[in-house]
Length: 455
Ligand code: BES
Ligand code: ZN
Image (cartoon, rainbow, N blue to C red; front, side, top):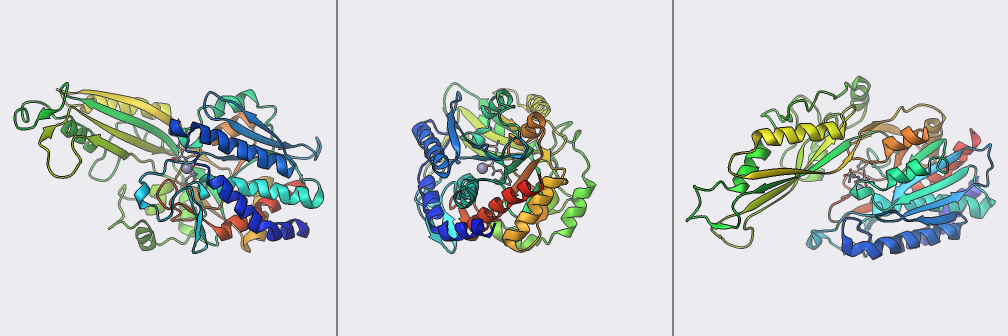
């Protein structure tokens, strides 16, 4: 199989150029003005899949299209591997904080800077190139392969779930491989051991019919911004615990995780410096990795109310809004958390304003079983590509479709991510390491070999 890896080494500059083309398409799923760009990204990927020899299809959904590439030449007795990724990206604002424009990929310090470089276009595309390396050198793949790319991961994957349900037979696989997560540290290949779930809400607070003079009316009319601040303040107690009744009821103990966390080298001060915060903080009684991987959270993601322009304007705003997300851990359930959240807000909402809660997207938490032939194959592939055995680490983020893959397809999900701490996913100056794009491509190609060999 050495020729497969030679092929990757020889063609890497072209792979990179192609990835740059992909990154230039502003496929922001959350924004309706990017609808056509979403289609352009799907079509670009479709063409690239065809070019490497996959049978490709664009599948329409009520939202953004799904792209499926298939190769079935290994025969019915060979295993089938389903690679999943997403071609949509997060919005780029605030634009002024980008050093180079988000959709003009730029290399600096061994990194590709662009929106979507690591989340997830780079990590998705390296699987297409790994398939190419096999097909162009051997005329075949060691396994049957399906590459499934969606355009709505960053907005909750609502249309992918029914697609997977409807196409369960076609998507049947013995392993699901996903590269959409981060390595624990540079040079340390990582298998993701868990994902947190998500429950996302908007709180709207309506006061008077319109903004009022804060002198003529202030003090006699309930201020929606003040009211919202009180609601938000009620979400945590003084120990940093979420104060919503019942919030922790379904949190499962994770003793083996705590063991694992202890075995990983982690430096709080380096982490603090990486995020640039004056100090770290969170739920009392837990270390940083526990807070990130095995504890649920509640965070305000955005706030809107009143006058925020230059200087002082004396005004009592008519309304206020907050976007709030809870990261969930096994065995919490997003629907149940929604009920508890709504009940809590109803209970603490001050008189004199109208408070409404809207639930946006959600995702179930997930935990890997971390055993069996797929995980063994992954460990060998990662060791070949990176020169050392992988570590197993939790992931604080969410990939909504993952639990459904296991439930509907009955196949284990493998998180083999090539992002790095500090990669600025969802933030200005997102980057992917060039070295990880290269080693990730080798690892993805080696994984196909390993999964083929072991049947
Ligand atoms: N790649 C991330 C998920 C991720 C982040 C995995 C960090 C492991 C570590 C993915 O693209 C993402 O951002 N997902 C969203 C899902 C949400 C919109 C439902 C998330 O976690 O916010
Ligand atoms: Zn993301």
